[in-house]
Amino acid sequence: MRKIISFLSLILSFSLFAQDDVAVKSQVADAINELQEFIAIPNDALNPDDIDRNIMWLKRKFGERGFNTAVLDTDGLPLFFAATPVDNEKPTVLIYMHLDGQSVDPSKWDQPDPYKMVLKMPEGDSFTTVPFDELGEDINYDWRLFGRSTSDDKSPIVTLLNTFDLLKNDGKDIPFNVKVILDSEEEKSSKPLPKAVKQYRELLEADFLMIVDGPVHATGAPTIVYGCRGITTLSLTTYGPIKPQHSGHYGNYAPNPGFQLAQLLASMKDADGKVTIPGYYDGITLDEATKEILKSVPDSDEEIAEKLQFRSAEKVGGFYQEALQYPSLNIRGLGSGWIGQKARTIVPESATAELDLRLVVETDGNRLKKLVKDHIAQQGFKVLDHEPSKEERMQFDKIVTVKEGSVTDAFRTELDNPYGLFLTETLKNTFGSNVVQIRTMGGTVPIAPFINELKIPAFIVPMVNPDNNQHSPNENVKIGQLAYGIKMFYGILSTPKS
Image 1 (cartoon, helix red, strand yellow):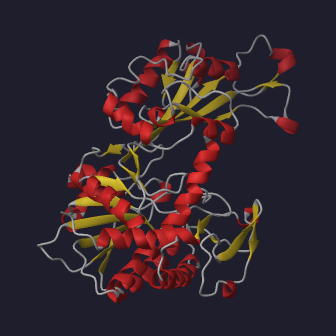
Image 2: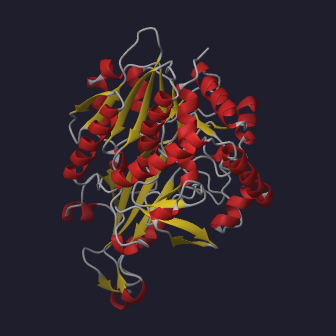
């Protein structure tokens, strides 16, 4: 199966771009230059000055394309908004992307400065740096552009801008009012977004929402995603002696918080990876028609297992896409005492587990957190929301401090939504290829506020390559995906919805 998918990917790559005309290739060259300029402006969401400089660049670039622009103040960093002049006879599409990026550690990158974009060509299993003047007129779509936010999420913004250039050059009338909202805190959970969407509701009104973020399916095929999981978090800390104690003197006597925590965590899941907490999966049903859609996604469970190097997957779902339809309970980090060369012969004073709970539409994050806390109490623990006092330590045998994170809701649009059908048919006609339709993706995008407030359907229409290293060192975008993005936007923004 893996070889079939790899071969399919090659065929798709050829068919998607073999017919690109001179105009698209020329526009890709312009997009590369503009992306290089955009990447050179650092965009760490932790640095407000970075965000301000990016917004100044965006105001200029969108203004040059005839957009009206505005900077929308929030309780945090501002949002950037742009819109074409409104025609009340046309439907309106709202496009969400984000301008901020993850922080960087330059020492981990294979280039001097992550904010100075580098051109590289594939060579075996690695990449070799190439001067930009070697691109030439016949741009090689297999070459890549490396730098922070080249894929997540500046290249989609740049391809949208360059699509407007191409539409104008071709004299195309855009059958939509186009609104663009760019988030500046997506990489740190978009906390101000729900209130901001409510505050600017009239400005953001639209008929449907397109989220252009993330990678296309692993096959490289055109992809549309109808929903994504939400997320919330819990931090659990158990306690032993008030300070670390010599394990020779107090082993077998002082309670060990590591074992307490391990036993508690083990009680939450069975050997097949299914959550054992009563009610955790309540409300989720998958009919045969839905399962057929899930099975139509060209995944290979065998390829995933080989890539991640494990023998057997957990049994929450029968296959990968089915597993994503259920909420997860994940240990994302564990800590107690010291390990490796720093290991000490002690009974630790505490142990901590960081959990994330991925949510689906049928599950409420606050309800799931309560189920977990109730389960902990049923295991004999005193559940606190603060560090225990001496009095509490002396009163209870087992104590756990639980710190709760905020909730980002899941969203999901019905598979037969008219705008979803329009997007699917347009992508199919644009690329001459079947479209991979994903009911729910595993990651989280902060879109629920738009759906809850604006009451509109939403769709994720990704454009970058799956192996883009987003959030990590050596983030990159394949040049062919810039061509893909321009063709994608061009097809959608030049096709009237019937």
